[in-house]
Length: 454
Ligand SMILES: [Zn+2]
Image (cartoon, rainbow, N blue to C red; front, top):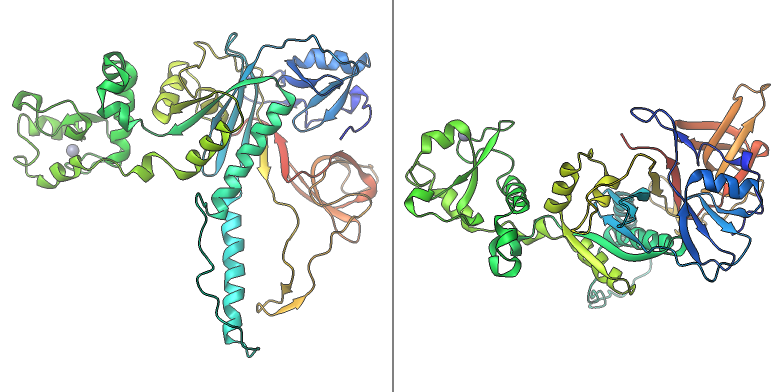
């Protein structure tokens, strides 16, 4: 959707954000750019983007993420392939586009999922359907054995997370020359930890391995001393059967203890020290479900289908990469640190992540109910007020004569009266009339704000 040529003064706070904290100057991520034939080119510096717009060489293709389209085709352009990196989470998925050669993080985003909302909506539908049992209506034949789940079935809430992630990878590939994908697949690589033959001695005895083992033990033993249960104290990796008594270094012989307990236990085994249960628990590996989650596997399998090489990494590796580079914990920085391919130095100063929130589109309910769940209303009609639909990103310029005077950029929720609600990065403003609004970006199922997450 080409929103016609936009003059450069039309760039708004949604695109160029003043960031607070350490970065006091105006910062902006690189800008995606495609040529006349929609072939993705190397993302450009915001200054270059501003020049292209002012000189009339390019037009705005999309607001979110900010993407330009050149006036001319560039069939000979050979942009450096970039890598899109993903850190899938249950609430938020981090996405980063990284140039492996220069270490530049070109673009980053955090996608907030709506898994919880999907679940709540389906539960309310289920409750309504169950209510029919108590009603005196015509007899319906029971339907048995027609509820089998197909192979690879995922619950709708997980499906929605999967779809959001794949949608954004596909979109980034459309506007940016992507040559590879990195994905954080598992929290801990239990195979690598247990089986030296897979990875070789270097990994087994390396710094990274120790780091990953510690993370694994913290998760397995619940961040507490296995003997006295103390939390919020420094924990030491402890051998259940001590080394001196022939105990091995395998993770099945390791637990966590606070310094006093470790000292007191000395060269006794855990059973001798009075904790026979620890022995039994140590033999049990962390449940697979905790280490590998179904959505990540589904994401991995579907990404493979996109025809790009997919690199996988572990959560331990991500955290190690991130702390080695002295970067704070955010979803997008985690994404940038996924996998062995992470460049030694990551340049992140310019990057302002785009916060993307999955919103859903309209209501699909064919029969709405009253407050008691009694179906008595027609489906919600698609409504357009003043050319706007709920979900469009707009800029409202309210004149000084009004009590609501000011400029607001955000997602509009329309009202039939024309007096709409706008959700901006700084809060929700009610009662803004549609005549003050200009469209920035038509609703595409997501809402957008720019900025570093807290
Ligand atoms: Zn202790």
